Image (tube, rainbow, N blue to C red; front, top):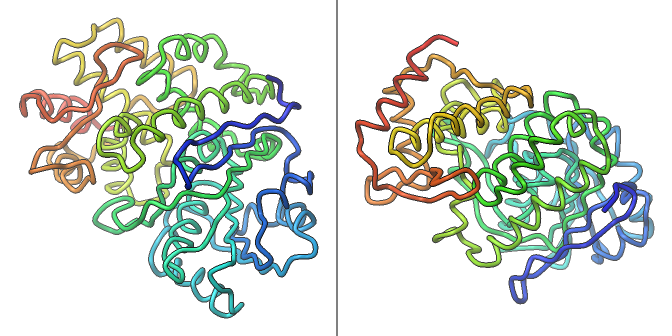
Length: 366
């Protein structure tokens, strides 16, 4: 696959199935846009950074429809119920009905908020994801998780609501700040670590081309990541089992994001550090060796992602992890590594081992 050849994957969920279209220049292809945004009435939700770059191109493909555009402030710190109200206000002011469609043009924050609004408005309207960040293209735009943060924890308020389509224009990654690109690469690495040793080896061989925005490398990374997620989501849409594997690093990472203040650490940065902690705990439990942990650390270093945790303290980290959505019957379920390329979800580990991992990372100043 090349960056210039759009290809389509399918998320197979019965009557909620939908396509993921991947390629460069999709925003300028009116047939692609109107082929997947079929409603007459449309609300395009974007943010103040992405809107000026890409909204006009998207709107050109929606010519002939009744379209409203809403720009939200940019940043994880605005992923709140208060800001979400602006989406509901826009839907109501435009007098949109249940046959309308919400289009999310932006990264994970825009997609999560627009999708949650679509899930709630009149008990559910269609929405289409047009992700413009690597993290959104490989992860957050796919799978139907939507929601907002709360001061007590990340993504605590939300709903499952599958999009009608995901249109991933690789060309939008050219305007992505390097830090955001690296944060997205963390989620790509996640797929290799938790599900595909061969993909992990490919990532290790292609870190530099990915960071250099090589379109062929990015196209392969996005497609392979989406293939892995599509298979897992199709088997476990609402995260009762296998889908939880996709949360590798997230329970640790969400604690970092909450403690540091939303927006201080990018989501992908926190996930990257969380994956290193998961590898550390996996090694303490005898699943993987010290050389495997070193391999994870080196890959993160080459991807210019964090390998040192903020000194939030082990007690606070554990407390925040206890608010994670994966806690069942008082046990924090974690995604660990049986080996590189094979993850497990478990709450069966000695509390002392987790405490040792938390102390070794969070008690040392960054």
